[in-house]
Length: 304
Image (cartoon, rainbow, N blue to C red; front, side):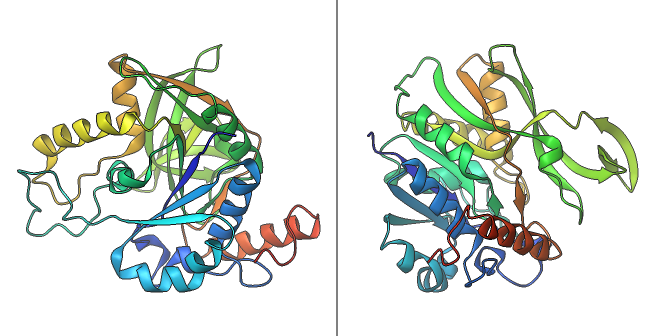
């Protein structure tokens, strides 16, 4: 079995979630965290290394609460996403406090991403099936510097919405062969009367197809793509490096590469229902969902 790595992006500031660190909120019957279930599913699927991408100020709590425990079951590494970590020739804007985005998070972990790897968010539950599909894909992915071969888990939009506020999703167009044609980072998506809509200033400006495929930042890459990401980040900074809130985001990066014909993206469809903790009100929903999965025997009662 080929070595594969799971990169877990856990450096988000969690501003919508409130004062607590949402990645460290217990959701399981014995205090398990959402990350515990992600790692459990990934390891069950065949991933044999986990890289946690965190803020340096979270290191002590993160290791004590989750990392030290998980390291007994799978190899664990830590990467630190620091907003001051920029390529030579660039400096941090004076008032910048916001991280540089998911693309920068992946680059922060590049020294540990030495084999095919998947990327996920720490505060999302994806289900077992997507990990199995990504791992199977990554076992056969090959290096390329002409057209990069990558994959993404394709969730159904209606299975990824929150009852407690708007969300951002990468809404995808997919061809008949399951390849991504276009991805549009769409903000302010809300669930209204059984439909998925885009809102602006409280008004509906667009209705989306509920069955559309969306990206939940669950990607699979060969490690050779990191050199391309580094080049793209330099180009991004040349245009946006002086801005206080601009972000270098994976969906937008992949969309740009698609338009340039530099990447082929296989969309791996999944019927799994996503749930996560975007808002503090989501916590009860997540706990109830985990409880149901444990009662159904999908997870052991004591995951730890």
